[in-house]
Amino acid sequence: MSDVPATPPLQGQTAPSKDSHKGLWFMAIAGAFLILVFGFGADWINGHVSIVSFVHVPQLSHAEWWEVGALIWSLLFALYYYFTFESMNNHLGDRALGFAIAFGTVALCVVAAYYIHTNSLRHLWFVVLIGVLFLIADVILYYQLKKQYQLKKQPDDQKKHKKYHESLLVADAPMIVGLLVVLAFQMLHGNCPEITGVIQDSNVKEMQMQMFLGGAISFQLIVSNVIFLLSQFGVFRNIWLR
Image (cartoon, rainbow, N blue to C red; front, side, top):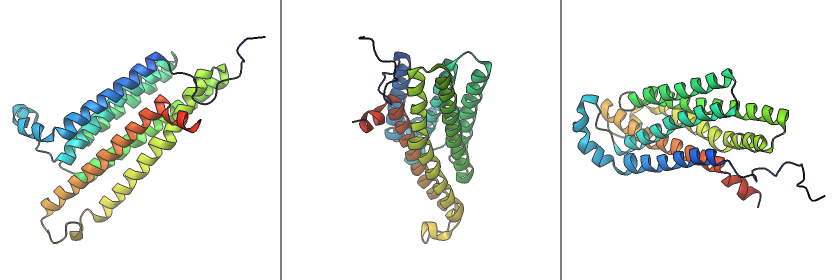
């Protein structure tokens, strides 16, 4: 018999669908564009912010504009998760869950952006909640796709649930841990005089804390999003299988 064996392929060796690649490429290109605009265009944005003064956009530091770009990129992942849940099956529960996660991500990103320049502690709490929501989404997708594979024994479902398991381990969990460490630092030292040396002015201390948090949070969000995309593209599995 020359038929192809019925055994499922090795982890991650089946090619992803063209539709899933389109979504991932969109997220990758959008992320690069947002980093270019908000990361490297902060001076230009601050110079032209008066044009949109009716929106009440404050003059943000470079680190804070980096974080705005990272938050917008995270907001776009709300759409990615929504359409991912939509593509699973036609169950009303899956569609409702996808909408709830997408709406929650949008709401948290908007509120986090609102506090980015006014209250660093509240801002950081909402960023942590964004990470928790991404973690919940990946956990649900992992178990849903695993259950789907156990019922239908489709190799594509096996590949998909392994992708989200991998995302949990290499993207979501490290991001949550990193953000919690930054949150602990902010809660312990945010009001300490030592944090800014001899500078005692509370406004200056808050500004310096915001700049530090902006850099730390934008790094965490950008790196976790990049790692998530690499995981979904199968880059890590191709490396591990060699």
